[in-house]
Length: 463
Image (cartoon, rainbow, N blue to C red):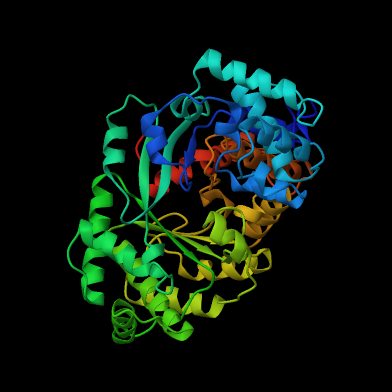
């Protein structure tokens, strides 16, 4: 197999950094979309398709780019047919991160070292399924064998929190905590919006006004905190201007009366609501993970057929850096700016985003305002290297909270090591060129911190 021990490590210093300092550090996956109920139920998988392809829209998107019919992606073809099709597609996806990730996943989780291609597909199917059957592979085993200590799933405010209470009673070697997300309540222009409000009402109290909604959201956040929540998540295509609460209340009242908001009214509500949420998170010491730049659900036909988060999103070119500045500044002036990890999906905005958050650092925390890791369409070799270049040029690498999976797949943890290898190679290259210190203990400690320690400290977790 082409992936060797020194994969992505191009010099001896990089190898030393990775094998002596990064490789064995635990994993803190502080943003993912793993289904917590699946982790609780902990049922053995039936075949490699279930654990490898089901629900992973990264892989689905690659297959669509090859021209594969949807029948073999999310349709009614058999699990085996879908798996064999993916192997055929992957065999020539040179340079795509999935070409690397999938190969490492087979080796790390199933001990299979065959190159993934059409010729080997049948043998890989048989070998992995035999391994699954012999070892009763479950979510718990996959997470623990990846050396994961902490997992933050992403949960809407009306999700069932008893699942986390039950997981906490299990004898797992890792913790699972919810990250609070109110995107369904943010998106007031969504067709089923009133049904979302009804779900929140069922868990709190009647909601007639914006004030009622705000009180209900705070109540739900308290419930999340009671089961270990330490982070929140906000996803925006763009930042909207912070509106007057009376104007936002009028838009909310209009929608609750059964009328659709105009585009301008929706932006009024979203601008105020983003501000309200971040201020609330600051009040309770909850870190905000702010995701910017995704243009979602571009394909109306496939949205109707498959729903959200099925591989039909893209990078937006919307530039709202000025409005983001005003949002952060207002919160800062009011003493209500929470710890914030800013995720940027448009690479041309890297330095704009990075230099902006540098204006709002404080002694409250090392790296209070974080430039999040290369995300989604950028979590590949090129994207990660560019992220590190921009981060080191305009910020401070040593306080960086490191990688995450942002995935729905239990097999995504090799992405952490993909990043760690790129990080070690980046630093090792500078060390060998005489562009920075060659103090291996000092640099090694920074690598260990970025790999795990910084995120533990940032979110206030205990090992």
